[in-house]
Length: 273
Image 1: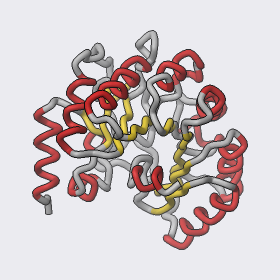
Image 2: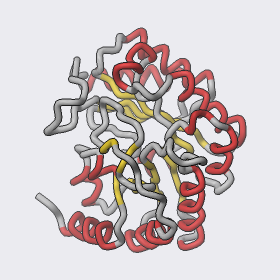
Image 3: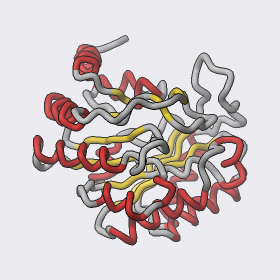
């Protein structure tokens, strides 16, 4: 049942004409997070240029970037009293800078309006273009997050417009350019991966010095037939085992569980490491 805080958050987000990945991706944690007055803002519109087979965000020709969006986002962050702001976006392969400039403008707008707030970005791969990654990093986010999502073998059926090596390169370049900014990535399980394949992904991420990791259960979006099916539901014990393996590999912070998503309790994962 919606709480007063959830209703207040919804009114604020809608009133400022902002998008959230909570709504667009039909996140199962929406009620919990909005009741805690937290949300993951999704910039650059609600239409994506890619068509991943796990994601509920619409694929269509996007609208031009809104120059007022950074200001409205900063206002929402201030009114919600956020201490850690998470910003993600649709893929914008149609733009010359693939949306990197809008990320930077949003970071700076939040920092100017609420000094002391920490900012985490969850970005597309930017085709691993170092000049675009540098634009985002130059604004000084505390966390640079890009999800590898799944094991290499499943990229073609699950992420047909993405490439596993390119995702790793995106994270690697971020760490090389700004080693002081923490890197983070996320993996979904239940898509048909083997334990050995999953373990190799965790090792690959540590080899490029990825700091933070999220592991969550893939759930096919509701009311859809175009997304891939769940092949396995992992048990809580299996998630605990994966977390232990990741910690032993050297990740500074790990969140692993059935309902864990990239930005689920992001502030806690950041501040506890």
